[in-house]
Length: 208
Image (tube, rainbow, N blue to C red; front, side):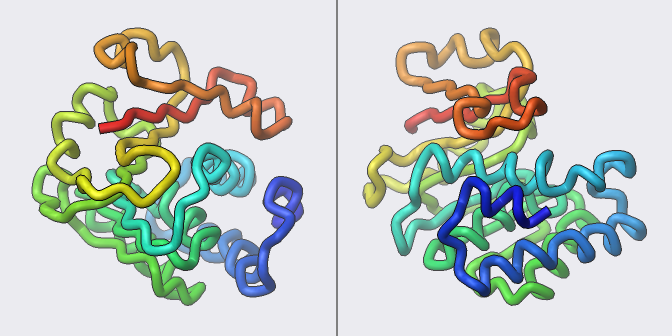
């Protein structure tokens, strides 16, 4: 369903189209060996995983040279779709589960992503500095902030100040409350019309 991606990102290059197109067969193949996406959800790969990941790209247009850490990437979300969309941005994908990161490594290698670097590493052990940390429903926001605050770089290069961009669902009042003065919560249904995105799905942006 590459048409779903083109619907919202009409200016893809031929290379980007081919990379997005290739994800379906690759994730089906790997998912049969290592379960990174629930079996019943693999048919919704483009809507529930690829397009969902790209909601971050509707929040910010990363400038070339931006450094991003995908914390708890699992099989490569949101990092791999974002790395396809932003070929001049560097992405490091980390996860504490070795077999999941192997899927991210194999998929990014198979589609020729040179700006995507998956590594088997726990967030606590990551020492690098990044403009943004992205994640998808890994842990409550206050816990995430504690771990990744050390990884946010000081120099600014984007329109939004450096910080955390996470994809989350449900009632988030409790976890955003400690940051209520600065946190921004955007309903993903403002970007994408599919009914699935109307079910309390958000991009959370927290400057650090």
